[in-house]
Amino acid sequence: MAFLDIEGIRKSYGGHEVLRGLDLTVEQHQVVTLIGASGCGKSTLLRCINALEEIDGGRIVLDGDPISGRGVDVDRLRRDVGIVFQHYNLFPHMDVLRNITLAPTVLGRATKEEAEATAVELLRRIGLADKATALPDRLSGGQQQRVAIVRALAMRPRLLLLDEITSALDPELVAEVLAIVRDLAEDGMTMLLATHEMGFARDVANKVCFLHQGTVLEEGPPEQIFGEPREERTKAFLQQIVEAGRL
View (cartoon, rainbow, N blue to C red):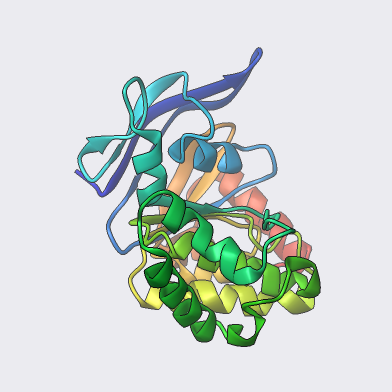
């Protein structure tokens, strides 16, 4: 069994079925990118894995333990599975250090001293050690997103979900955020990320999954998906990306 095993999950909103029996696996230390048109189910899938949305069918298993359905310990799940959104969601009234240390201390992951030491080291790694006492509104968008990633990492997750984390950024700030993700990939962090950054998806992923109408229509290594896609819908999507100058 894979480290993350998603089997036939379904999710509907009212009469609209967003995920239609979707299957997906992620191996430990693997980086899997989700690509596809807006509305294909990428963000919904990530939210279901983190139990922000309840699935209507199927199951999700992390390292042999079910993380969907009745009886799941959601607090434990969210200690093991971190998620970062396109909007940073930092607490505006807390400085950077407190934003990072809040969850580990409240959930008993670390003492205050341990959490602060971890936060300082992580901030140093991303070049923001001098921003520990700054409020979020004193940071650029790229800096806020890097802090949001560090906040997730401070929980020492086993799996990190990244949901279009560069979509809200100005183009000149995208590179600094993607550099952090690339470093995490090189460190062996297991990641599942939805992205519109096709060049990044091609460069950083071990596996690329093309979602279409709530299912994984095609998956494979980046060189195959971007170089020789098999499905006509995948080819059409990538052709639009090329014509828009995004690949």
